[in-house]
Length: 196
Image (cartoon, rainbow, N blue to C red; front, side, top):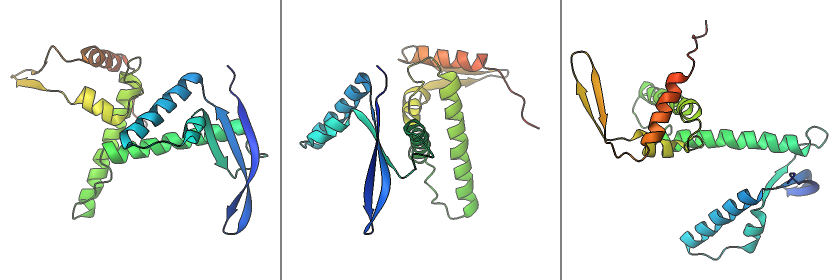
């Protein structure tokens, strides 16, 4: 089914003035609409509220209101721009929520700066793990907290000998196949020389 997009000229009242704007609507696929309707219904059930039927009707569309002129960007370019913006916002939110980038409660600036460096470095490592190591697995599009809680938080035994460090994991780990696939993907990834 080809994507159906509508671009409607509207006006927004802001501080007593009417500003020209555009309402861009794109119909979602049947699968995306069904997933969104299910998410809305679960949220309503969890909050024990009766939802507005308009929310279920709007679940079938991507809705964007913008003041970008139609001569500058057509509807597809606006949707691509906002999709990129949403992805950036999601990465910032992940960094703050799941990698604790918002915890700057130390007494000194240097300690807070070091904490942010560690958080940023952890974000880079998890992004590489997601893009390279988890490619082709169920966790390839997972959020950072899901990767951390399901794949990286493992119970194991560490034995250190003179020549080796042995890591022993339980044989009943449910994501053992995903873990092995990620390890194989990371080993097969090409190593790049640092710039400079």
